[in-house]
Length: 123
Image 1: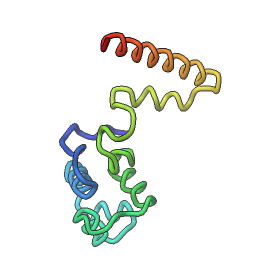
Image 2: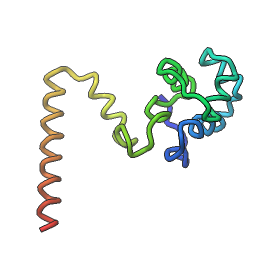
Image 3: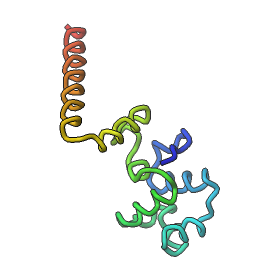
């Protein structure tokens, strides 16, 4: 999935984020409506903050805009892996159960070491 340009949209409301992402891709409201399968008036309502889309529409908007639904719904610090780790975490989904267990143990060890270092530094 293509990464969106790094702009200030990450701290916007859903309606502003949707409008900004649409404009960055040079999509008209009508084009986006056609891609999602809703009437253009609905896109205007979403962008105006008058109504919120259903989960199904959010999924279709994310696909049409080539972003994750998290990008549409959450601020940058609210949810999801940082962009520089996103591909690695997506790859974990293709691991076998044993490989996932090893990766989890490794991450748990790193997190524990980081926490211990933070606690020692704060003494």
